[in-house]
Amino acid sequence: MIIGAWPRDAAGHYPPEAYATALTFTAPGMLATLAWYWPMLRQA
Image (spheres, rainbow, N blue to C red):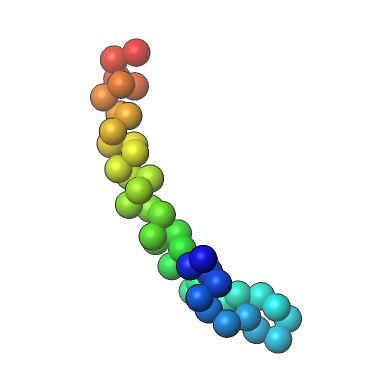
């Protein structure tokens, strides 16, 4: 959905900025998940 917000080029590819933005939006969620599970990993 985020990547699709950018127009495709003549070859049908999305620009690198589209992928960078999509990864930027998912990074906080991944970090929050890591922070949630980190104490459980240390106890095992």
